[in-house]
Length: 370
Image 1 (cartoon, rainbow, N blue to C red):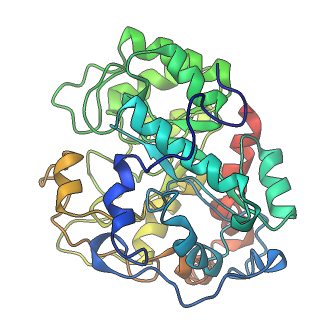
Image 2 (cartoon, rainbow, N blue to C red; image 1 turned 180 degrees about the horizontal axis):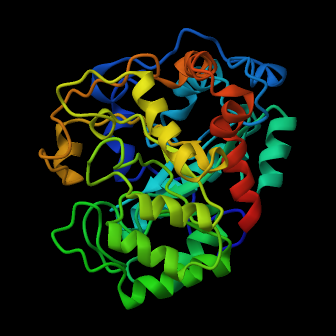
């Protein structure tokens, strides 16, 4: 099993498939051709949360595939402009074990250099320590368990190296179960149930984003602790197969988890509608009214993908609009989180709701399992 500091047998790595070409393109680019917010220079430790004057102790994006070890230094100013205190970058989803190890080791390499001012967070205590020290917290996330390649020992290895959130599937079916866009809907496999049990033993939070409805319900049935949907919206607002049924939302709440509402335009509203920050808030409000505002978080899912990525990840044009993608106005980048906070308050949802959705609820869940 790996030591706390990282996975065995790796020196300074290259970047895994998710993000390799992204790192080769201009680091200020966002998915869909927009530009990340690079107008602000990096600030000192005391200014880490200055971008959002919201009173929030934590500002956390629970799904940040935009960030890779190579692109992070250039993207950091945009994170600071938005007042982020922690983010959950995607280590891998459908990549191989070796590629995922390389990307994971890249994050450990960054964290080992004080100039980057980041801390890999395994617990809510780590989030507090990072915040108090003016560091950006990094919560490592597997968006699919293909990289464990059918091995519980490899799952434990990733957990020991700091991965704290794991999705069983990424859209398609794999050895653990069926994904949200799978033709089959049979749910978790026997191995998938074993994997969910192992996650609980390792202090890893199962994540049902990208899972089929049946798989998500099976995860909830199998899990002994908290379960989240890191970046998913509500079917009750928009009937997309990547969104969550009321039964799944209720199950997540019953496990003490959170639903991170997602800014990806294809999951917010139909293609004839230009999405806005209000669409994202509508999904959050639906979840809050269904199960309580303590179960709402953010999983914005900003990424940087090109046509090769579209093919590699198997995006189905029935459900993923063609490139370029246009992010919702008023929350089109991390740098616009202050606008999001203003709009939440303008809609009368209150300070407690705002502090919870920005990161307080996510931090609570991380503390419950680690």
